[in-house]
Image (cartoon, rainbow, N blue to C red; front, side, top):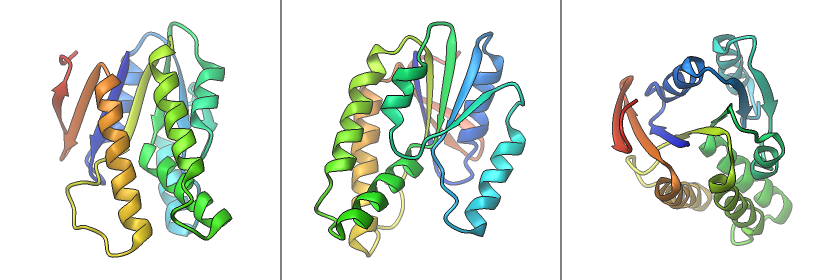
Length: 181
C-alpha cells in the first residue's frame, strides 16, 4: 500500500503519518530527508526526532531516496518518508550548487523518475509525507517557482499511483483517494 499525505506547514501531516505507522503491527523504518542548513532547521529536526518512537529504525537520506527504498524494502514492513518537499529542495539545491544553472535539472528528473518507477514494485507499506505548495502565493524567484512546479508535478504523479491520498488541514485528514482506515 502507498499512502500520500499532503498538507501545509504545521498541518498535522507528519503526526498523522506517524500515527498510521505506530498503529501498524509491522516494524517501522523512518526515512528522514531533511538537512540542517541552519539553526532553525536543526531545531525542527530535533523536534521531529523527539516525537519518534525509539524502536523505529531511522535512515537519513537527503538525495537518493529510490535507492534506499529498494534496498530496505521487505514485506510486513512500514517505511515512512518525511518529507518529499525537503527531498525536492535538496535535489534542486544540489543541482544548482553543482551547475549554477537552474535549467540543468538532470539529477532532479532522474531521482523523481526512479522514485515513481520503484514505488509500485515495493512490498512494504509506504507512507509518503509532503507539503502541498500549490495553495500559496506564486514565488518571485526562479528557483522557488521551479520548486513549486516540480513539487506539484511530483504530487500529481504520486497521487496517480498511491492507493490512498490524504490532505491534512489544521490536524484533520481529508481523504482524497482511497478509503479511510
